[in-house]
Length: 70
Image (cartoon, rainbow, N blue to C red):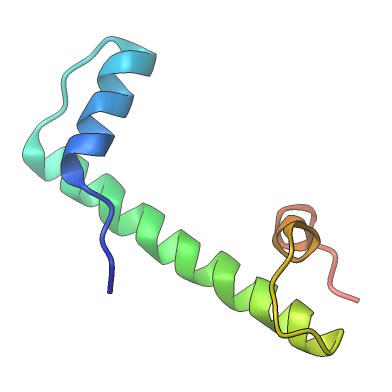
């Protein structure tokens, strides 16, 4: 499975919040983000299948965000 680079998280935190983050802190954020991405992807794939499409669209992802479970 692909992994979000720890360095990307460190840069993000520094750029947006002006703070440094430890390796362990960045690892924890990576773990949380990957788990959430898995949930979102699963939901989006189920929406696409329900609409008989082989591709996930922005609409499928946004349905997760707004909680639209038809």
